[in-house]
Length: 342
Image 1 (cartoon, helix red, strand yellow):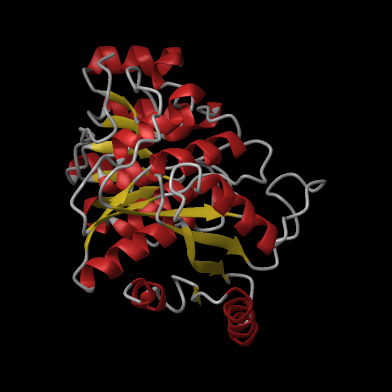
Image 2 (cartoon, helix red, strand yellow; image 1 turned 135 degrees about the vertical axis):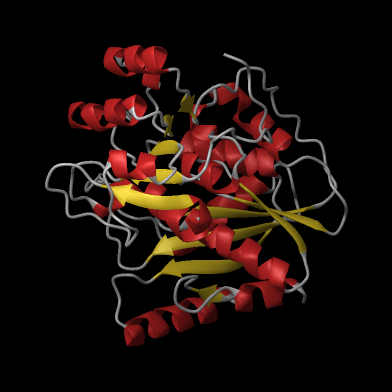
């Protein structure tokens, strides 16, 4: 496999048919949802297997129908524990291959590890794209000061809205005339932007160096908006979060949190950290490579709250921490971007 660099463009052929799997877990299709929301022009349709009720509101079509309408790539737009191809998915993947579609996956397991998929791809001459893999010649981090400005999303836990927040901030900054660029660090972000680095598939010694490569020195007025991963308080993913903090050398942190989440995702014995403690710890680690790092805002995911309760909690956090608190899906992020000018 040819080694990829952090800013290499992904060679995925559009348009896409998004595969939503065969289950009913809404969180499992966050990759498909991210692509559909942020890059809708490349999405031809969706397909869910079995009796799955999941939908993104895209046209529903079979593999054959999608191929006849011009689909070029079958996207496994899913995330599951362990990152592997589940047995009930294989018939859909093989059917897509037989209809001439390339396959793209952001899972931890490589597509060619599954014999039926590998054999079908070789027989029909289609490409298998393992978006998460291939970064083999990264360097270790140096912590040397780089020109340009950087915003990094951090979180109290995983799956609290870090990707959505950074995409929304990038879009709003561009609207307000900033020279801003989204920097993807996960498979969904990479498929949306077309480039980036899946940092959770990088050997731990090279995480900081990989982010330094992703966000190199730039013009003084250029902003890189860096997608965050995991949380310093999540025992499964804290290592990736720490490497991101050091490598991104952030000027500004955005703390992301889901309102009313009681415990770390999937770990009921691990309570969600206190917001003040989480902010303090992230700033402490960020200042290793940028002593001037500061908290710029709080992104509060209010999906489980009423409008009134969301308004109350955001106002309470703004008053407590003295920074804008917003929900990018409800209030937008203009208050955060306006505060950058002060």
